[in-house]
Length: 156
Length: 156
DNA sequence: GATGATTTCAGAATTTTATTCGGCGTAAAG
DNA sequence: CTTTACGCCGAATAAAATTCTGAAATCATC
View 1 (tube, chains in turn cyan, orange, purple, yellow):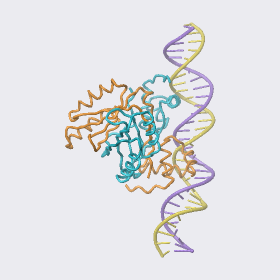
View 2 (cartoon, rainbow over the protein chains, first blue to last red; view 1 turned 135 degrees about the horizontal axis):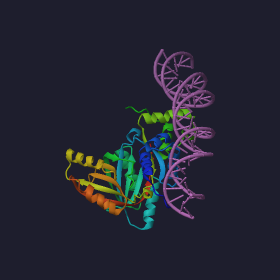
View 3 (cartoon, rainbow over the protein chains, first blue to last red; view 1 turned 90 degrees about the horizontal axis):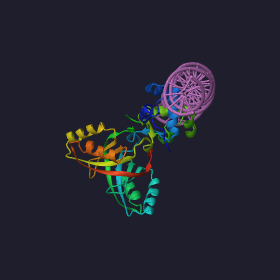
View 4 (spheres, each protein chain N blue to C red; view 1 turned 180 degrees about the vertical axis):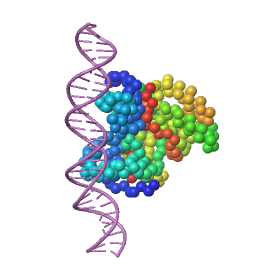
């Protein structure tokens, strides 16, 4: 899909909407220096072309009782397409796995996983992830603290 | 801050708002089976208690010309507080680093980094990240593809 | 159980916001 | 120089959020 070029105003819109997805159109128009009508038109265009994919509320993990977040490096038992597909299909159904990336390097996949506490995490990793047949091994990195977690991508 | 317990309706609200942060209050109220007034009241309460932290637009990385995303495992030259603080402070100022987590395991920090292309990435890693004095070594995992990237945390 | 206090809800009124519409100015193409 | 297309503004309309009042339900206490 050919995406028409984005001018400075579009960049600014994207930057603002990434950091505040609930800003009103009136305020948005003020910040970029246009009237509400063309502002809305631009935002709709960004949505319709798929440049803006979606909007999400971000919740406080700890406050809802999810005290543990980890990265898990997964090595599979082989690299045939069928093995990878099998793994991905299983992963889809596990809600605690919130990210799954196929990566280069010393492992095959990198997962981001959340759990209530270490005990819950242990159960998940031992009884769900390590039980997947095609998984040869896993290595966990527990997140001690997060210093940066921006939702704003710097658009080149 | 003592967060009052969340009932089933709150859970449903959080689930819906995580997957669709721009749903209208009217529609939200229909989906949870309440009238608009108490629905809004609950959402405001979730916002004011900080359970809902913020709202964000998600944009299509590739469509805005950000073709590369990586995870970088960083090992520092030591573990004194001053070293870590120095590292974190530098990281803050680099917009291409969108996540920075202090982790357990074979490395000290795990970064999520975006760049326009491999060439840009190489410049960033060599001229910015590896140039930080306290960084002893880095190891990059390039994301080949992402199979899961949900914004919806399963609330226990 | 009964009672009073507190919370939660629904429905209507009000305010704010989004959305649409017609027309103006500008710039590129003919 | 004219034409076309595009993006903008400002006002009008439609939709949504927000507020308010009172009723129902829940809970703790007696």
